[in-house]
Amino acid sequence: MKRKSPLLTVILALSLLFVLLGGCVGTPEIVAVDQFWNTALLQNVTRLTHDGLEKLLPRVSPDGTMMLYNEQSREGQWSIMLLRDIALPAKTPLVIGDAYAPAWYDNNNNFLYASTDRGDNRIIRSAISGGGRTFLTRTTVGRFDHRPTIRDDTILFDSDINGIRQIISMRENGTEITFLGEGEAPVWHPTDPDKFLFTRNGRIFEMDLLNIQATELYGDPNTRCALPSYSPDGQFILFQRGPDQIIPGTTSARAGLNLPFSRTAGNRTSTDGIQIFVMRSNGTFLSALTIADINSYNPSWDSNGFIYFVSDASGLPEIYRARINLEAH
Image (cartoon, rainbow, N blue to C red; front, top):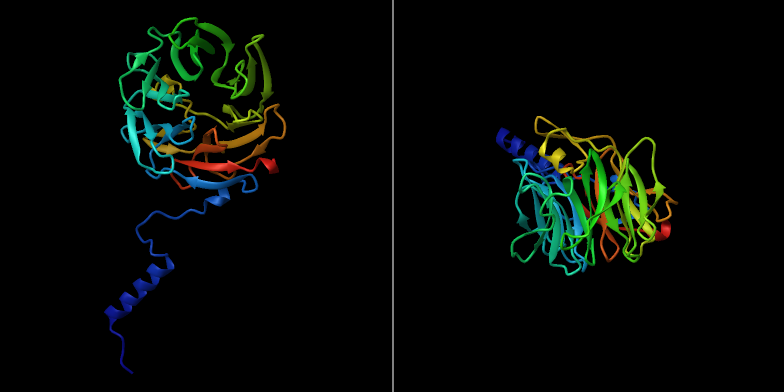
């Protein structure tokens, strides 16, 4: 019998190894992400971004076609990015550096954000079509004006007043500034013009502006809730639950980003179990949408009922879209 040459034996062995590895030698490991979702509730999960950069606060335009979000460069600079087509990963940088927490106007063109452009956070209006910036808080209301949201001509945001985060309302032209009480991350009700959600000391509240009364909807004594938002019909609330860790004195800490992770020597270090939950708008029927030992955070709805969030499910922070099976909730 003719013996195989040593070279041929090596080639055959390498070929077999390549087949066993699915042809992915030298490529990132493929992750079966279903293990990270509550598949009875969270369905049609799709990854929208693929660059591995840190991301926060995906926000979809009112018509459901575009997305704004925060992205951190490899040099540590936070900017605002735009996906002009939500189904495609091609991104357009809109505001480079010191720009946080984008929020859409109803016209699908203008947006608000917070910026440290002139030394302290101010609320700024800009447009995805270009055309410069308008400082809506020409002088800061407090320290680190942050997380703006607009309905009609009224803007809600939070700011540091004497060391306490306070919710503030003002007209779009920067007038009629009103302090509404302690809290952060306000978001308008989609159908009731007098109500909004916010958090206070890690607990979720709803404010009624008719009587300036806040009602506690949910809180967990062991973990911190953050970034609640209503479903398009106002019947459900989406939020993240878990510890928020930031390093005091960093740019991210100054900006009040409440990053759901800490950094050590430039490397991302996961905290324990930041997950996404849904509940009815009266605080009942709480359910976890994400599970397992990864971080999923910064959830929000769009007008079509999809939800968007950032997750480490692929091994890197990327933005995902999904549907919630509300009939099973």
